Length: 277
Image 1 (cartoon, one colour):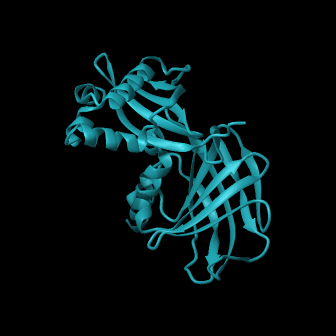
Image 2: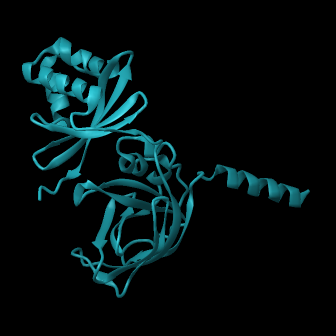
Image 3: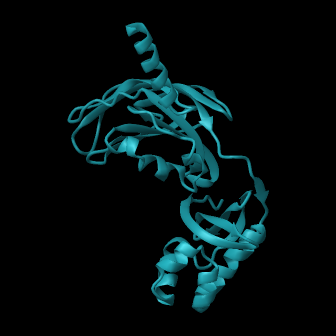
């Protein structure tokens, strides 16, 4: 009976792990903090903060398992993941992996949001042995203890291997963004003219109900949407579209959703700076 009970416990533990959870080992050590000892790894494609026209693989190394499946369908998977309950009480390491062993690191202590940021090359060295469309694995380590501006030293030596999770495949939107892009452009025009009725018609019902008046609507939307942006394309995913809009050397991603025959604004996020060269 005891053997059977242990087998059932093992089965339940395995079933609770995310489908695409990979493996991680090693540790991050800082002189004034506890060690971070990741056991799990997940990865997904995101925009490169150095140039949002490019893509980069973000790897999340965690002490507790997280569910990646829902996050990768969101407009900003990174924000979704770092705000998950599973990470709220656990420390983690973020890696941005590019070709040629080019890796950026952010080791985060969740209780204080203390962050240790570094990149290769130098004292931080990477050996990425697999970087394909669907998998990433490798090792990241310091060659010597690194002193921070806060008079603390850190070292890291971690290994990881995981599948790369992807959202459902979509259809590319050309410059102008197709019908979702036209709807977004109409919303931007309504904002410039302070046409409250047109603004409320151009956003989802939940968004429309959150505005107290036209000034509130224009100000709130203006936090996320550039005034004089150029819609350069995007991706259509069924009744959802991710529209790309560029302005002031910044790429903004806009989620538009279809309601009947109408496309409406749902949310937006700044993807990063773009290289104008």
